[in-house]
Image 1 (cartoon, rainbow, N blue to C red):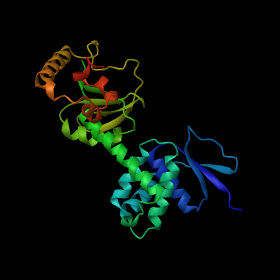
Image 2 (image 1 turned 135 degrees about the vertical axis):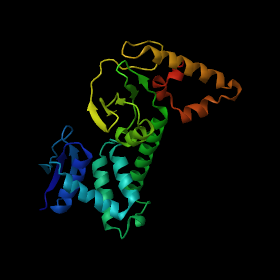
Image 3 (image 1 turned 45 degrees about the vertical axis):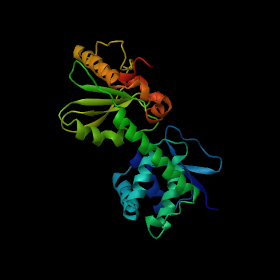
Length: 258
């Protein structure tokens, strides 16, 4: 009897890729792949803890990328969705990819392949929205600070965009939901763990954390936004489609509408 095994990893992407390597290398009959803070013992499966190994993770990454650049993007984006059970769906997706003659031959009528592609697309859409909707506020420490609250864990995906765009400024983007941020110190971007008691929205309520000129700039921006807005051309339904209401509390130009 080939006993099934639940692989438990540390929750990181490299940890997940290491789990895939272990599963392939040891020819494990995988029952599930779970994060260590969410793991549950199955009635008919053993549990094996997988320790992250960057070299093993790289081998899986390169193997997927060599098959298809589109597939490696789908795997990474879908992983960041944090969707329930996404690890096993990805494991099945990678198995199908490795069996295919090339990544271009993946069958999109297959429910797993289609699900991962659609999930990756949703994460990609959220990435682009965050790149457009982030609103920085200047702190008294001369760091440009912004809150975001995305549906998916997209901070790793937007890092390069803001590093390239604001290379001459120190900035910190903080994910309210996941309680961590990415900080740029004029040299490189690093992930930082934070647990802020006060979540600062771009509203009329002022905070001592920010420079006084920040609020003057917000006022000027709001005045500009109002003056360039043509009331007769406003389409609320279309506007909410492009700028969902859940983002409004972090947009200074929307502070009166929240």
